[in-house]
Amino acid sequence: MRLRALIVLLLGLFGVRRFFRGRRVSGPQGPDVVVADDGARLHVEIDEVPGVAPTVLFVHGFTARLEEFAPQRETLRGRARVVLYDQRGHGRSGWGDVRNATFDQLGRDLGAVLDRHARTGPVVLLGHSMGGMTIMALARQRPELFGTRVSGVFLLATSAGDLVTGGVLGLTARVGKKLHLLPLWLRWLRWTAPVVERLRRPGTRLGYLFTRRYLFGREDADPATVRRVQELLEQAPFTISAAFYPSFLAHDEVASLAGLRSVPVVVLAGSDDRLTPASHSRLMAAEIGPSAELVIVPGAGHSVNITRQQVVDEALLRLIDRAGDAAVSA
Image (cartoon, rainbow, N blue to C red; front, side, top):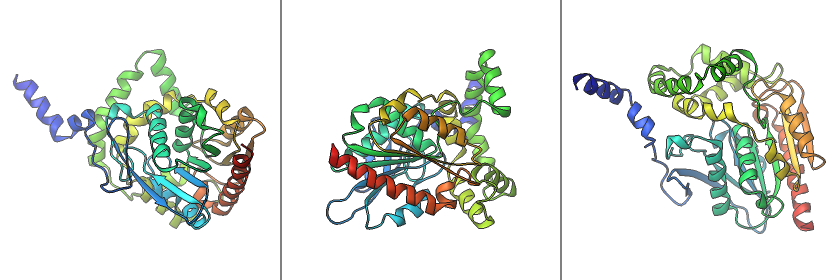
């Protein structure tokens, strides 16, 4: 009994019990909150425009928050109605149940935001990295939305699957699956995540070098921008990475791409993206077919919407025009 009490005490000190219970449900108060089906409170921001205008709904990437779309938000000011939200566990949104750190749940979250804040008029969905995967999950769950309420999709620096196949992580995943050790390893990662979070220090040189290598390409980074992205990503606790990592290992939404063939699509990636390589975008565009416009930005990396804003903004405005035409035809 004494040993058990000591273990419980230690876990309580490190915050593990709270992490596994998934009780981080605190979120913003006020009108711009969407409550997910498991109780997570999702922070939503809306830029309204007078009259009838298309809605662009932004879905941010892993460990980021809605502020990553600040450049595109400014470009669309007065041109379109903009809806942005923090994905669960990110930014000002709550967790809900930590066991729901899955793309299935993220797809349902996006559907809830869409149902609440984009009920009428043409809607364009733009997802960066994990945000694009969230859109694919929604396309699998609710294909009837695409071509009716959703009139366009922008898949930005994302992938439909096979994310962890090469390098040390890929080798570890393959060996873990073969020896049936992967569940044990992932459980250990989640248990140690709160301890790592307490020891982590933001703004380090190592964090800067990691951000520079994996979020930027050879030709699209300056030190100030790298530090800005580093600061944005380091605001997310390490527990988020630990909770979602199994979902990235299992991510496979190639079949859901068929649901996007009924709407105009832009698939855009940087040629030097190390997280979601441009080859993944080429495969997605080929799978979607003629409705997809493929844009590969030379020398750009994963943060292409920040470092090559003009290219991304122009592609987005073209998509909005195409989506409007498609909505009128429908």
